[in-house]
View 1 (spheres, rainbow, N blue to C red):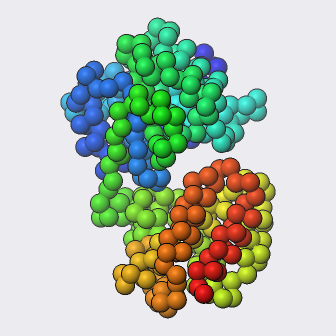
View 2: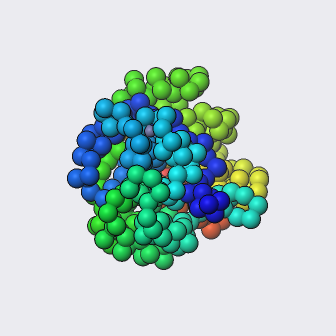
View 3: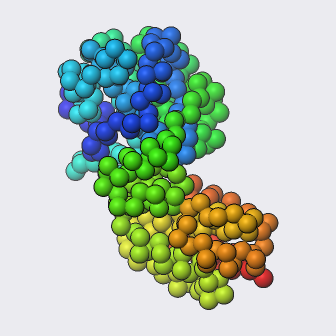
Length: 345
Ligand SMILES: [Zn+2]
């Protein structure tokens, strides 16, 4: 049983439910066994899709659900789920179990999918239901995704597969087409700000704005303590003529391999927020992500080549989406900064 639980588990604590997801969960659960066996939950990163999938899984495995279908949180099934040791639940995420414990992974490999398929083919331990959560689903490599196809097409009775992805276009089409696509609910600004304040975020409105309205991304921004670092990037971007790509690139190189990815992600997030607000400023609109930088943005806006800016913004987003596999984090940043400078002829 210890191997089984290791496969089902991960070192992350069980997430608290997100208040804006409650109604969505109740609606999903109302479908009961008529619901499609495979859901593909989509929506931007930082919205809480994995949390949504995990709580749907818990409700499906709860042994005495509440009247609205949500998990009771108190039964044995709920306890096993929250401890990530429920034998009828598999969670495939970016953690892998090695000899000396849990390690972060870039990819969901075929052995995890095989363990999932084995689970669906053995008899259930508890209620007759089995649930798998795969998040982020686009990180299954091709072999893993192919190994899932048969289960997606002809799942054994009682099997529910919950895939979550911010980039559903990167799933194998044969995987995506076998799922029903649903969009994760998005909180109002007031709901998201209230939730962030309850998590101890000092300035929820700015964190939320900077994270493009995505509450979990805003919490991560507030928690990662990168405020000074992001500020350095905004300062550099506000003075394109004085910007020295190699000097900013050196900031990425400070740190080990995993840290360089984190630093690049921060830089790309800063470039993305900046360029999207610069495009707004060029169109005469107030900034939506960086209201505190409106003066600098307005000063740059008349000089920027707007079509090239759109191209640059797309390039930033493209690199951000592949940040788990950057060839050379420092060079990625330097190339984008060199391109940024050309936007101001
Ligand atoms: Zn329960």
